[in-house]
Length: 362
Image 1 (cartoon, rainbow, N blue to C red):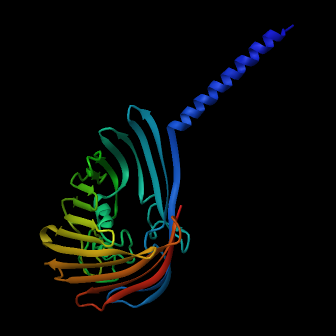
Image 2 (image 1 turned 120 degrees about the vertical axis):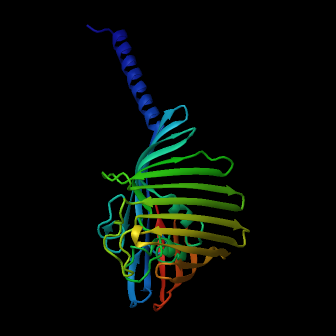
Image 3 (image 1 turned 90 degrees about the vertical axis):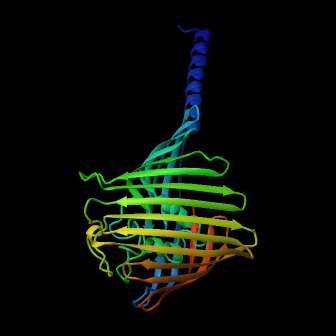
């Protein structure tokens, strides 16, 4: 027969074990975390590309492309953390994942890595340093609808067959099969380097970039360079766009940017040089400059930007794009906006875009 003392001892031991397990579980959860986040952006208005007809739209991504993401970190001790991020775009107007038909499910970011005292190392699909500099140093940030600098950088060569241009950066805002190192922050100064493989038997197919960022008080600046070498013969643009461009052997892009915030007005400036090489078919370069401001107005912000690009060779084009907008915060997570953009490519009829939208972050 069990005595009362025996029963009490076993009860005490069981309680101790359970408490220890709970404490251990609590410690484990405290050392790791997972976060779900994203944003939904919809706008209503009208859009006319240079040389094309006007259309009226209910569309997504007026000020920012809609996306959702999940990221996590686990403390490994001694200043080390393992990290991961999965982020995918979607079109809220029809529920389709991706930015366009055929886009991958996690095209924004999909990587795993290590944070350490000496910096951060990640591998997978990564946002390019050129895209980061492009959006941080123009007033309309990452808007693919209203930002003149995004148009001149990412909506051009090999992207939009709806208008005739050989300007712009070939490739995406993210690189697959990539490895990136990011340095710690040294009094506002940081640097990063990225290398991406073509994952083919052609070892010449590669991409690499380097970036320096500096933030100090009201002043910020960036310098970034990216180089893309597709293979020993042109072939990245297998289907020519309206300009007739077919295949690049390589492309190099350098960009400088700066901002200065006086509180009552913030100034933005960018310069970009793009060198395109088609091998035996020749080469051409493009000079691009952007200037803009943001001005607080009531609880919201007025945004204005102008971008100018000029071909040196190629189609011998000029492109001028200007935008004006107002963003009004309804809360910390929700804002409404209205904007107008004018776009003109030489020898083509002008285009413009105007509309109103709402953006909700979670």
